[in-house]
Amino acid sequence: MSLTSHDDTRMHILVPTINEEDGKYLAMKLDKDFSLTILEGTLDEVDKDTLARTNILLPFIQPHIKRAQLETMPRLKLIATRSTGYDHIDRAAAAERGILIANVPGYGETAVAEHTFALLLTLSRKMQTTYDRIKEGNYSVEGLQGFDLYGKTLGVIGTGAIGLHVIRIARGFGMEVIANDIVQNKFAAEVLGFRYTSRAEVLSNADIVTLHAPALPSTYHLINRDSLSGMKKGAILINTARGSLVDTEALAWALEAGILRGAGLDALEGEELLQHFETSASNSDQDKLYQATLALQKRQNVFITPHVAFNTTEALRRILDTTVENVYAFAQGRPTNLVKLPELVTV
Ligand code: NAD
Image 1 (cartoon, protein in one colour):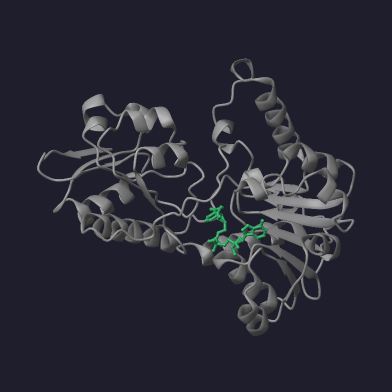
Image 2 (tube, helix red, strand yellow):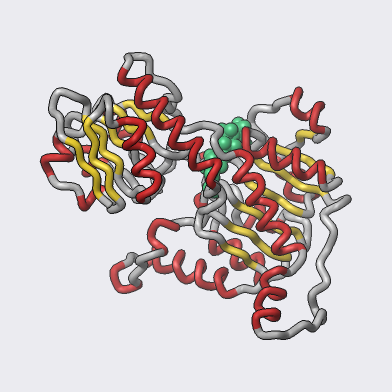
C-alpha cells in the first residue's frame, strides 16, 4: 500500500512502516487538513522530493531514525512516534535541528502488562513443551509439572504505567510484590499493597523479576552478570521493556548455570538487526550478540516474542488516535506529549 496526496499549501506528513488498515485509518483522520505519504515500506523507500517536503514524520519503533535520515528532511519540524519508547530516534540530532519529538504515553499499559503474564504463565506452566507435545499427539504429563503464582514474590523494576498495571494483575493472582523505582509512588504502593525496596533486594528476594523501566544509560545492562549472580536461585526474568536493559550474553550464561529457571523476553538487545542478520556483514560485537541470542532461542526454558506486547487491537487504535491528537496539537501551535531531553541510549 502506498497512499499519497499532494498539496503544497498544507503541511506534509510522512508515515512509513505501517500496515494497510492502520494506514487507511490515519488517512481518514488526517487527509482533510494535511497532505500525506503513507507506505508499508521504510523511509529508505521514500523518494528524495517527498522527504524534502516532509514537515511531520510519524515513524514506528523500527527502523531507527538516524542523523543521516534527518538530514534528508530539511523541513521536518515534528517526529510524532507511534510508540511510547523513543530510543529509536537520534534525539541529539533532532534537538540540534530544532525538531520536536512527541510520543504516545500510556496507550499500552494493559496490553503490555497482560503480555507480561502471558510470558510468565507460559513458563510457569511449561506451555511450550505442552504445545509441542500435543501437536505430535503426545498426551503424556511427564515433566509438565509447573508452579503456582499464588504466594510467590514478584519483583518489579519500574513502577510507571505498565509496572503498576502488572502489580494490579499480580495482586489478583495473590502474589506478594516488591518494587524498585528511582521515583517512588507511595500512594500506589499503599492502594495496591506493595513495598518499595532497593534494586539489590528486589533481585535477591523475588521469585520472578519483571522489567518496566525505559532504555537509558542508567538502565543499560541493568541485568548483567553481577546482578544475575545476586538473583534468587531458580528465579524467572521477564523483559517486556527494552532489550538494552539486559546483557544477553550474561543472561545466556545465567540460564546455562542454572541461576535462572527461565526467561520470557518480548524485547531483545539489537532486535532491529535480528530479522535480516548476516554474520559476514556484521562486526564482532554484533556477531557475539547474535550468537548469544541464538543460544537463548534454542532453550526450552526461554520464551521469546518479537516485540508484540503492545500489539492488541485496542492498544493500536489508542496509538493512532493519540498520534492524530499529537499532530493536530502541533499544527495548532500547542504541541502535546513532547519528549523531554534527558539522557539517551543510542542503540
Ligand atoms: P513509564 O514512563 O510510565 O514508567 C517507567 C518507570 O521506570 C518510571 O516510573 C521511571 O521512574 C522508572 N525508571 C526510570 N529509570 C529507572 C531505574 N534506573 N530504575 C528503576 N526504575 C526506573 O513507562 P511505561 O509506559 O510504564 O513503559 C515502560 C517501558 O516499557 C517503556 O519505556 C518502553 O521501553 C517499554 N514498552 C514496551 C512495549 C512493548 O511492546 N514491549 C510497549 C510499550 C512500552
